[in-house]
Length: 475
Figure 1 (cartoon, rainbow, N blue to C red):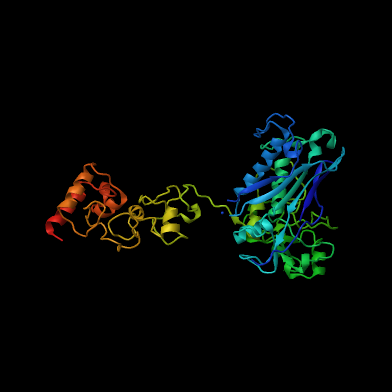
Figure 2: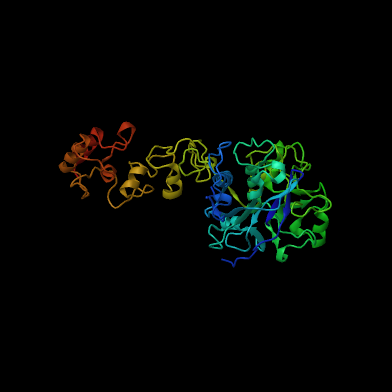
């Protein structure tokens, strides 16, 4: 649902504008955002008015600072959620209603909602398009943007709101100005999934189909979620102040820092004033929350870049939280336990601070996800040479069998493996041990017989002695 921000007496409020382009699609990893700049020359993001850098925003024109701030908000959200499909925000600054005491700050929301797509966790249920794309792993409506965001360029003209302007820094030192970064983080969340599509005047779902938001909107008075209620029950619930809560597990597990704004079970209260406040009711956390939350219907001055319970709410509706991979090995820290044991991909027993725990030349993520080898053993199949050497040689690191005898000293003729270890192999091994011939992966795979300690992964005098023994003992 597209929403807009207004200021009345310098208090920021959220009110709806309209529902836009809500269409069903036919059945059919950290997130990246793309800002689709719809502004024309000289306006909005393209405004060339010179400005001084402020609060970490180093843009030197008004338009560039605005764009930088959108990108900063996208960066913050991109670090919190995962999607293989880029999230496109259709964005612009336009002159909107404004006078000395009140103004429309802007409007934002999802452009499309989608149901019954491949990968949908629940059938016959509406999802915001960016979330649906993330769950499906593909762009379900190719060419369509996901979120629309329009903000009031008149606020920067020093005539609107008695001289109150947008604050375009990243550090939240906005003083009496309006912190645009906080507003953007709030609005992006609505477009990503922090909103329902119920008509609060008649209790009806859009097209008589539930949305994912309704599954976690619980009325404690009757013990029913909104997707379980009749239209009339939803009308009554919408004004059941203090008794409507969000009972998603991720939010509930994270409410411990609140000293106000939860029910006895730790569920975060939703905003349900009487009478209904269109565009604010239900699709926000309650104003009684303490400390203040990003997704309250009033933008508070003491908010920063923290997402408090907002990212947990998005996880509840289906977003995958962005993974932390400290060592960059392709495995999330959460599945690397550093226990020294290997119980499969859900408990690798690897070190989250070391990309190649066993030192075999393959990163832990490559071993688990690509080669299915043990990331805690240098030689998964115990054939005498390491997984990295086998991978480079083209042999199977999980099997001692191969297209030639593995690690048998057969080095001659060079790169032609005849299955015989004789004086020719001794000569080739000697030259490799003396660095007179290069040691490539295939050669090491055949001649590295001494695979412990410093001898592992190279052909040296220890291997030469073993090859000599084999040559003397005969085939």
